[in-house]
Amino acid sequence: MLKSDHLVEISNMSFRHENGKLVFKDVDIIIPRGKVTAIMGPSGTGKTTLLRLIGGQLMPASGKVTVAGESIHQLSHKKLYQLRKRMGMLFQQGGLFTHLNVYENVAFPLREHTQLSESMIHTLVLMKLQMVGLRGALHLMPNELSGGMARRVALARAIALDPELIMYDEPFTGQDPISMGVLVKLVKTLNKSLNLTSIIVSHDVQETLQIADYVYVIVDKKVVGHGTPAAITQDGSRELQQFIKGLPDGPVPFDYPAAPLVQDFLRGEEA
Amino acid sequence: MIARLALAGHAGIETLRQFGKAGILFYEVLFYPPNLRKGFPLVVQQVYAEGVLSLLIIVVSSLFIGMVLALQGYHTLAKFGASQELGPLVALSVVRELGPVVTAILFAGRAGSAVTAEIGLMKATEQLSSMEMMAVDPIRRVIAPRFWGGFISMPLLTIIFNAMAIYGAYLVGVKWLGVDAGIFWSNMQSSVEFHADVVNGILKSIVFGVAVTWIAVFQGYIAVPTSAGIASATTRTVVYGSLAVLGLDFVLTAMMIGEW
Image (cartoon, rainbow over all chains, first blue to last red; front, side, top):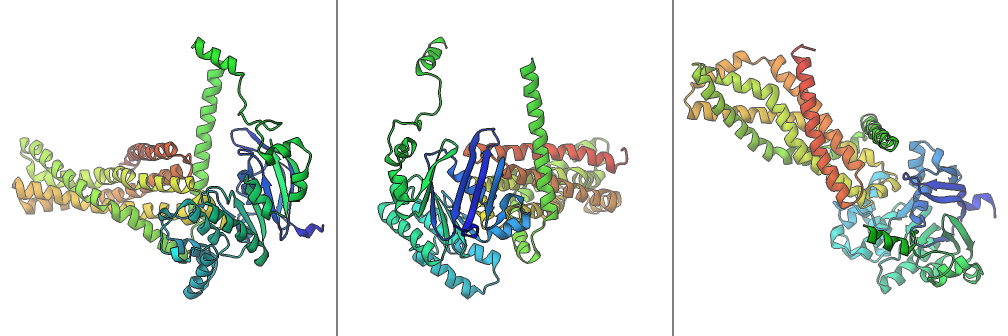
């Protein structure tokens, strides 16, 4: 694959939270242009953190994150914001502006970054809302929307400027079966019709494997496997199999690290 | 012992970090102003939210403060046969001290807490993050307009406070207690100096405006994004804001009367 075919390259990257907790250790990830890449892993592995690192909101402890050929953490404030105009991100909670209605939320990036006329903005907003099936909800305020609807509005807003790269943070969580089906299809269609590059962070294995072209699985600070969905499903690694099949026992612990149970009980008696 | 020392050191470093962060935020607000076409309407909105909506509490409190001041002042002055000095007493205490200080403390409680809570909630609901990812700088779009809105509102509210408090004193002193209106106003006019009293009072209110709104936006911006975090950030705004106003008032008064 040519180097220019990679929209995002993460090489040898480690990240540590402010509280000192290590989240990633020497992670290498390549996001190919024009494809849907899924990043999967159990809760708490830092999948959202990874998206924030790609968006330049967090600083890695070491290593490099390159987006569209630019090392994102070395860019000036101005250049970083220029680059972000080419990205869209769908947040887990939607992140809609609560003082603006659905229409104004979707129109927000257009008003901020373009000089388009009001009628043009109107047309574009309606088109984006039509894509997510919420054209009729344009006068509603965010507090009148259900969680699933709010996320669809946020998706319409994220694609308002027709970005090159779109990052979805848990897009399928909390969706009813119909919205889930529509969303899965929508992510795929958007990627194809707008020639986007999509990164989906999710732990909904079945839905994600359906639409992803390439999958990375992160467990315990490292990438434990990557490949096409078919290759991932057939991979012999115990960590991968445990995650994909949802098995309680295996190398990936379900319990948060703790002292032995007996010790904790005895401590209670002493107290 | 060592553990306690380490704890004290840690707390000290943390406090310095907070000051550093507050300084950086202040610098960004001052030196990266929003562009005029987009920023002006946002600042006007904030002048409305922070200034106009604070009018009720400012007008009502100033009226009562002026009335109480006249009532107390009249009875004390009357003992010395100096009740004609009621006008200067009220005007000087309001214009020099009570106006700027009480307005700033009320402003911290009414508008400062609202600004902190709003910014904190925007942070907790990922609105600030999503704005950043849409390539819109939240410092220019959210923080700076709120800061400038407070900065503009505070001196205006202080002027209104001063006028209403003096009117309250007039109602009690002249209309109720029978001080002669001509004496009330003319003594006030001859005792109050425009520069030394009125302008210095307004200068104080500008400094208080900067301090209170800076504290309010900073506390909102660094609030822990949980309900308890936002509650404590709001409380800190009111407490730190009020203390900063009282402390700064002493420093400014010392500077203005030339003792420093």
